Every structure is written in C-alpha cells, then in structure tokens.
Length: 420
Image (cartoon, rainbow, N blue to C red; front, side, top):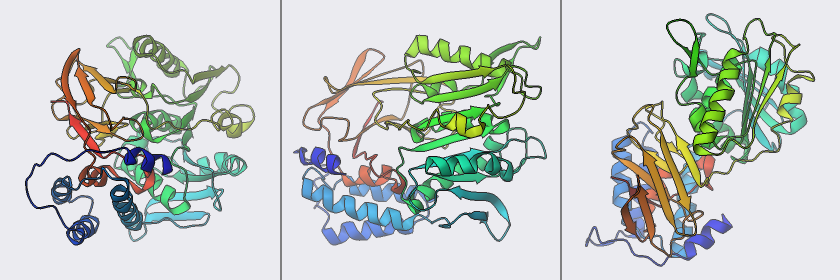
C-alpha cells in the first residue's frame, strides 16, 4: 500500500474535461460509492454507469487518492461474504445442500491458500479424498486449505456446471476472511484434480502463485486416426508466467502419460515462441501407477511452496476460453474472442506497451497501474508494430472502483487505454 501511495503521489495530471461539468462534491461521490456497493455484481450496466460518472474524479493528488482508496477498499471488503473461520465440512448453498467443501490446514494465521481438487469422473468424486491426501501437508506448510467438491460429477467436473466460477468465489472469500496474501494461492489435485489444477490454473493464471497437478493432464485433442495432436486451447499459452511441477508415473493404468507428455511438448513449443516457462518442471517416474508421488502430496507441494505470484508481469500471453473471464493481468477485454492469442509486453524504460495478435482485438484495453507504469510520462501503445496511442495517464476514481477487488487489494488500476 505504501508503494502504491508513493507512486500515486507522483501523479500531477488532470482529467480531460469530458466534461466541463461541475465537479462532483464529496457527498455526491460518497453517495455514488454507496449505490455501487449496494448493487448486486450481476447489475453490470448500473455499476458501469456509476464508474463512468466517477471517471471525472481526479486522483492525481496523493491525499485524494488515499482518501478514496480507503473508502473503496473498506466498502469492498465489507461487501464480500465471509467463509466459516474454523475447520470443518460445509455447504456453500446450505438450503439446497449444494456446493460441498471442506476447510482444513492452518486456520489461525495462514501463510497461503491451497485449493485441493479431488479426482473422479462421471458419477464419482469426493472432496474427502483430496482432504485426506493434502490436509496434513497444508498444515505443515502453514497454508489454509479448501477442498471443494465439483457441483456436477462429470468427466470434466472442474470446468462444468458452474464449478469453476464457484472456485474463484471461494478463493476471493477465503482471502478476505482469513487475511491471506493473494500472492500465495496454490492449486493442486490428483487424477481429475490434476486436470482441474492444469485447467483452472491456466484460465486464472493471474491469480495463482504456482500449480502442482498429480496424475492428471489437460484435455488432449486427437485426430480421426486416434493420434494425439495437441492440448486443449487456453491452457499452455496462459501458463507462461506460472511455476508448475507436474507429477506423472509412466505405468499409470488410469491416466497414461501421453497427455502430460504432449503438454510438455506444447510447453516447449510455446517457450520457443514466447519465452517464459522458466519454472516449469515435469516430474516423471516409472513405478507409482496411479498413486501419489513417493512421500505423498507433501513431497509435491514442497516443490512449489516458495513461489510467489508477480501480478505485474511485464510479458503476458493470453488465450481466452471463457466469456466471463474478462481480465488477465493488465489486459482487459469485455467481450473476449475465444481461442485467439494475444501477446503483450511492457517496456518500463520506454513506458511503452507492445501488443500483437492476429485478431482485431475490438474493445481490448490496457490497464494502467501506478505500481507498473510511470504516471509522470506519456504512455505509448503499439499494436502489431504500429503506434496507436500516446498520452499522459489520467488516474481517476471510476477506473479504480471498476477494477478493484477486496481479495486483491494491491492490484490497483486507475486508468485504461483502449487499443481500438
């Protein structure tokens, strides 16, 4: 927070008078903020209208920024529903007995958060299995652990029937409830849980510190002759900046190694194209069949425990596959085009973003954070080799509010530049 305020203290800019309208008074701003937080998150149009109005509130002065940041953060935290604060078994939707999950591990002062994903398939899957395999490990590592059970027990349970959206909600609630550093969130799972760790970890790579799938892989794609030709879209491309340790036994009768081996080749291909993947490790053995690695899941989790998320990545690759996942690091795309690849780099010395893609990227935006961008200099944006924007950043309350999350309070964006 201190670094953020220092950066914002450097802002000496004024908002363009979109308006020559009379500035909002402090009471009017407070009323707008109260209205915003009273609205349901599904009331997107009404919330957006409030944020657009508040874009006229200039945050260039440190004192002004500090005042409204405190107000936004306090209201946002209050608006987040809290999880139970002790170990146990719970239903997220108690009345309908849906959304079963188990809380375990360190609940007093957790140093991180583990999302442990169970195995299973059509008609099977039990959160108790992941809890029994990882609860003690989480306790030893000082992590809070949440073991959700998929909402519908299907072949791809972790990405079906609203389970993925629910997992993200659980993470946000856990971070706020237990005051967990959002830079220490880890996904792990065995079998189908390994698939979940790969896939959800890739879809939400900007939210995790590291991943540790065991005996599970992203979905392979086969040709008409049954030959494995690639891995599902939206996984490997998104993992450029995420540390991973993938465990696989070559004698596994239930999850043969071919899918993970293909994913490793895909990683090598993307690494050659985009760089990155410096902390990707494939741990292959020949004698564990479909069991945990020697030493249990603690042996696997020990390999990722020291990783910490860097939310302000300078080089980002995003391949959207979810229409509701509209932000990825400092990229924002309200209506993302599925399966296209967007590459973006930020040059700090030049204060320049360089974005490239084969898609048109209509509606694509770059989010500006004082933690990353020099707000005292012009920001330049290039797209496919052509300069398309050059202007001074304009810190404002509307963008701060729109992109603020109580579960990620150091990840603050207070301006944005449209690519087109």
